[in-house]
Image 1 (cartoon, one colour):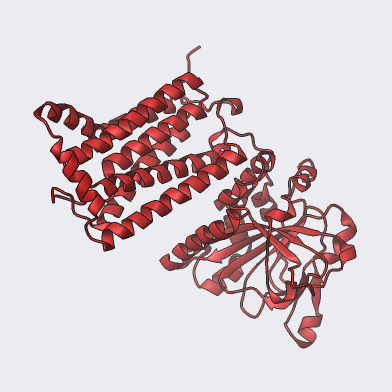
Image 2 (cartoon, one colour):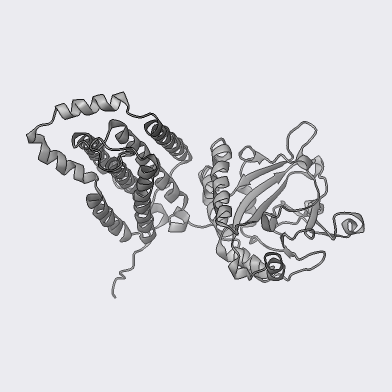
Length: 471
């Protein structure tokens, strides 16, 4: 019997995951480091020479000695790409023996680090003390900080004994300090360049660790609780064309999973208020709350909820699910956009919704920035059947009175393509006696142009900064 050479995925217990407290601390530190890097970049770009830089550079140059030249130049090469790239490749190869996808993630992170460094140098454009090339930030310091920090994280991830991690961390601190001093000694950088490299390296390394931890379920470290199999459910549901193209989905959550899903819904305090006119109650609060199911928001949930929602959020944003909906609504989408559905790409935004007594929304058509709207109902039983969305033939008059009611039943839902002056829908006002109305909304946004792609991702960053971190 021959052993396979294919890299294996370690069992769930072998890879560690960050606690909620660790995540929050790392996110806060990464933000502070990134802000420090940007602030320092503005200072060195707009403020001209800094007295502290000149003073420190003069002091270091006064200490130069022939005896130091060879060892210092050897040390400075430790932070160069000639050393770090082979070291990174070796490290990725070792990790790849146990976990191929994790090794690929580390390799991509290394390439991204060099790209960020080059871009930052070009944007800031600060001359070096020796005139040749750009100075801010120090690429040697940035690179060695990222390499060292990611190495320490990898040792922790694979549960290497603590004494080994402490030893490696101690050596890494000495190496970073030595490389930083060597860059001053060889007159390649100012002191503030070193601080910028340290701040940027720390921010990048922490971000890498957070992203990898957030995707461990995909890399095999966390068992999935079972999927929704939403794409297959969409494919097997017949299209209804009255009052406009839509599908009413049943059994979108497997019966064995549904009770767990309800138990794992986040606390209301983690939702943000959605303040549109129809949702406002007399006391000024909103009757609708929203929680974004992006990984960066989910990773701030308690561990049990995080492990449950990450794979579901990934499925909701998957290409398979999007393609299933596009195929189901092919005629309407091709009519709206004037090209085949295989040329269309939308940006999925999954959210959990929680509505309270007093919520309503009048007859409206969704914004044309949306391509498709999907809502999955999550009531505890059949008692809220009357709270479902209503589809209208028109916005006014007889058309508004011709209605299709989509019952708000457990593990059901609906979807429709957004078509101007066609996809009219509403929700009747709910009462306090109706209880809380939980659902999951999946909105597909149009991204026809490069600017659409950029805007959606900038919105995602902004939402995380103002809502995710605040929660």
